[in-house]
Each structure stands twice: as structure tokens, then as C-alpha cells.
Image (cartoon, rainbow, N blue to C red; front, side):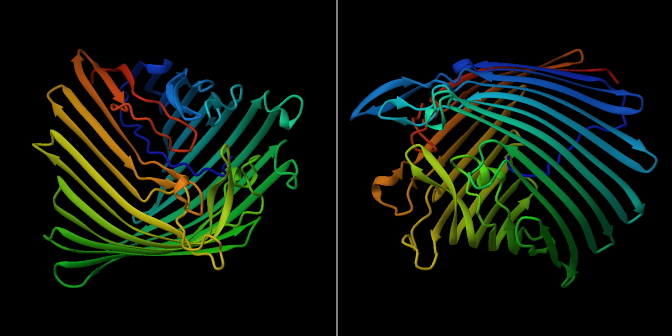
Length: 507
């Protein structure tokens, strides 16, 4: 229910081979987690086809600690089951000078939606969400001239969503029975032109979204619709400042004509300054961004706000890249963002949230990352750190200069992959600092920091034309008790084991 989806996929399918492949994946783990995945590729009637399907399910019955009037008790999560069945079909073919790619995604999902845990009591023990989704994508490209490329892309989507909670008697004697049906379409035409030192792009895009439902906000009715047309262009050029110093620039502009709100102009400018045979590069961007509120944020019952305004954000980024060789790199970027009418989920009770506009928000921070491939690429490492702060700068606001709720001020992540022959070890760590839950930033509203440590091991065997990978993994190794959202506890330590098989014809 988030409006038009513009999904870009990277296809590995080509017409250049008639080789047949097939793969099978089987996984099982804690809390009834299970997964079965099948896929295959083959050539037929001049088209390279890829067919796949998967089944993913979980009972979701994990234990968690809860406070009940000062005493800690262990409860089991109820109504947290999940089931998803998905099918994909894709084909790539060459017709005259056109290269055409089609993809079809079909998905059916059922999942429990347990509510908040308050004083040992769990809300929404019978609530379930059912969703069916069909998405079709087409991309067609061809050369017009040796230095010109034309692309036409389109998509169509149908989504049907049902929320059922027989215990929500405040909604009526039969509880909650919400139905939403969404239709979406998109068409884009893009032309790219190249020369030795510059590239130009121009594209036109049309999007359409319509949603019907029986539980919109009272003043909305039963149907909402949105149309938009955008015109965009960009120019990329390299400037040789001397024999070894190069300045690469990119300028973009986009104009959106929207049926439901004001039109918007979005400019962007970026640069990259680098010197040949020198490991440091400087880069920066400046943009004035525009974001429409999603259908969830506008219309979803007890969360959406129908009169939300679009976001406008003026952002600046400036940073540097150090890359002494192809195996080692580090980046540092500072950012400043001034946002008008920022859309934020704001808690309005211990168990419910609402989408609201914040008049003016000033965000600033720094992002650092480093990555490397060491010991002849046997060890891959990546580290990242973000320090940020976002404050309410709305004039005459009661929360002026207060930190926005639910946004952590520090984020840390690290990962490694170690390959020893046919065996691979890996792990990752993530950390999020404390967050305020209310806009007044009182100490009682703090949600504690949390961290996670995950690990896995894989072993690969090859025999005949089959590749076989055994995998075991452990998530939340330290069995941390944490919540990303207050009163919604997440699982502790869990295990999963699996097997992946890939078969292929001999060339």
C-alpha cells in the first residue's frame, strides 16, 4: 500500500548459452523456521527462461522475558507465525535490434500480527494479515546510433490485502475485517547519449496508483487515486584540470506533475575530484529532494493521516575516499539535511503509532566505513560507523531543539568472511544506540541500546556437475533481549541449518 513501485532488477539471463541449470535449497531452524526453494534456467523457442519458486514459513513461537508489576517472567510469543509462497518467471530475448526482458512475480503471504506486550499481557492474539501480490516488469533497450541508447520500461502490479482481528470488538461486533485492493502502473522512456567526455540522459515517466478499501480514514471514502508525470534530465562531464587532475561533475533536474498535490522541481549536483595515481578522491553532492507520502502513511486505519504534506529536503554531502589499491578502501562523509514537513511515525499510545508531519527538522552527522580483501582475498572485512542527530527546528514548537523520537544517534556494523579452501566462516555485528520514544526527550522515554552478533559456516563440495553447499548459522549469538519498537520483543538466540544444490549441464 505504498503507491507505485519502480523496481529495478539485475538479470543474469542471456541468450548466449543453451546451458540448463537447476538449484534446490532446503533450510530449517529454531521456532519452526523452514524454507524450500527451487529454480531453473533453460532456453526454449529462442528465449532464455528462468523459473523459480520458494516456500518460507515460521511458527514464530520464541520465548522472551517480560516485566509484570516489577517481576520478570518468561512468556512465549503467540500469533507470530508466517508463511510465504512465491513464484517467479523471467525471460530474455533479442528481437531485431531490441533486447527485451520480462519478469513476473507472484506472491501469497499469511502472517500473524501480535500486538504490544504490556505488563505480561499480549495484545492481538488472533490478528492475521493476508496478502496476495502480482507484479509484472518489462524492460526493452536498443541502440539508436553507436552513441545513443533508448530504454522503455513498464510495470503493472495488483495487490490484495486483508487484515482480520475477531477480538477487536471496538471496531464492531465482528471485530476488524479490513480489505484493501491496490492497482499500480508505471511507464518510463529514457534516452542516453554518450561521447568521449560527457553523457546526457533524458527521460519521461508516468505513474498511476489506485487503492480501494473499507477502512480508510472517515473523511477519505472508499477509493483513492494518484497520477503523476515526471520529466528528468542529467548531464555528466569530465573536466581535465591538468595532465593528471580530473573533475567529474553530474547535474540533474526533475519536474513532477502530481494529481493530488503541488508540482515539484528537484535539482541535484554532484562532483568527484581525483588525481591519477593518487589514492584520495574528494566528492560532494547538493540536492533539493521531494517525497510523496506513501499510501500507508496517508490512509492505513489507525496509522495514516490523510492530510499529510510531501517532504522537501535540502541536503549537502561532502566526503573523501581513500583507496590505495583495488583491495582496500575507506570513506568518510559528512551530511547536513534540512527537511520541511518530515514524515515521521509518532507514538500516540503504548500500542499505537501515527504518521505525522514535523514542520522543520535539521539532521546532521558523519558516516565512516572501511573495507578490505586481505591475504590473497581469503579474508574480507567491512566496518561502518554513523553518528547522527536529528532535531525539531519548527518555529514555536513545544519540542523545539529536541531530538526526534525513534532515531538512534549511533549505528555500528562490522562483518567478516574467511575462506579456507572449501570452507567459509563468516559473521556480522550490529549496534544501535538508545532512542527517545517521545518528542519531549524525558529520561523515562528512553529505549535502551541493543546489539546483535551473528555467525555462519559453509562447506562446499563439487562432484560431477553438481555444486553442494552445507550451511549452519546462528543469529543473536549472545542471546540479547531487545526491542526495536517499544513493547514488541524480538527473538533471542536461534539456529538454522541448510543445504543448497546447483546442477548444470556440461558445456
